[in-house]
Image 1 (cartoon, rainbow, N blue to C red):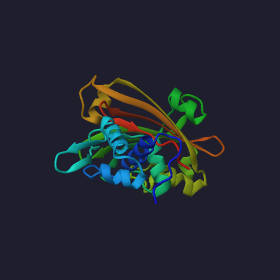
Image 2: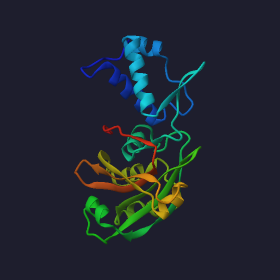
Image 3: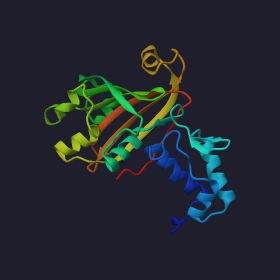
Image 4: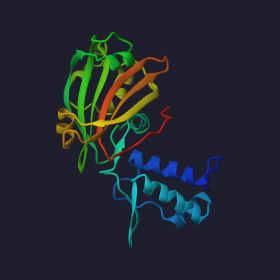
Length: 246
């Protein structure tokens, strides 16, 4: 049975579905995207509309056409998954990283919260908070560098937040297991900038190279921030966001 079509233009619905599968890692780098003919049959749309959807994915840098093969997912060097996408993946699959991705934890300690992070956590600037720094990689190399911040009182209830070991299922899952607090909403804002010396070293790029920097938060049902973060990725990577996580 064909998926239900609503008032959104059909090709955008196809784009959203396929982009979601790519961002979630269900369609991995090197996988073939369904053919135009198959998309048209599955969704009950014309081949011209299906071609428009594939063209939109290609314009986003998520796929490429290979002669004699078809349309192939190409994300290792072009995609940066947003915090929202990682939170959504954790809540639906129990895994925060897509296939082929992994993170190295650089530090896990208590540190003074900078102003923007303090605002997100609802604490005073300079107050102690848990800080976890990491670099995320895929097979092509560094994808992003990020810092996650948490309220200091979680050090007792979720001691793994201060460990350099990766937390199975991600930090939101560990906090939910220990406290019952579940994320139901995220915020994610970003802008363009130039790489600092530290960012350049972490990402393997030149100082001053274009980067995307952003801030994100995971919020519980009471409107309180569970996790606040800051991240940076090299220029040329597309950031995909799926808004609904619960």
